[in-house]
Image (tube, rainbow, N blue to C red):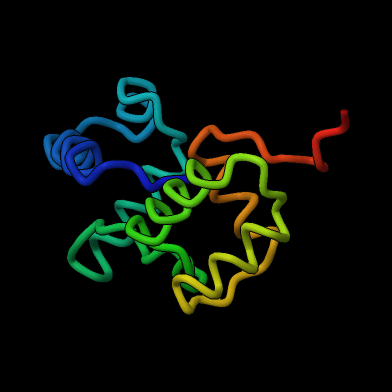
Amino acid sequence: MRPYSQDLRQRVMARLQVGDRVPVVAQRYNVNPRTVERWRSRQREEGHVLPHPIPGRPRKLDATLEQRLAEQSDRYPDATLPQHTERFAQEQQVQVSRQTVGRALLRQGRTRKKDTVRQ
């Protein structure tokens, strides 16, 4: 889930500084009252309401590599996921799992080849 925008956070905090109560502000901006309380507490303790960094490691396939995978998928439309994975590792020198390749193709709205064409 993506964090709330900084603009929304600042507007909520501005309403609290004017003197509005937490439930009123929460309802006005369609935010959980507990979230508003957390932001207020964070403002007091840390001096800001910036979102925490998103945990976890970054993706192995950045936008450039995903674009190259899409181009590969266009060049070899009949390749299966294991074939795409192997070819990608050879051409791009990036080792990724079959699941990573599958998720990347799904993010691009591409369906995967499930098995070879039968005649």
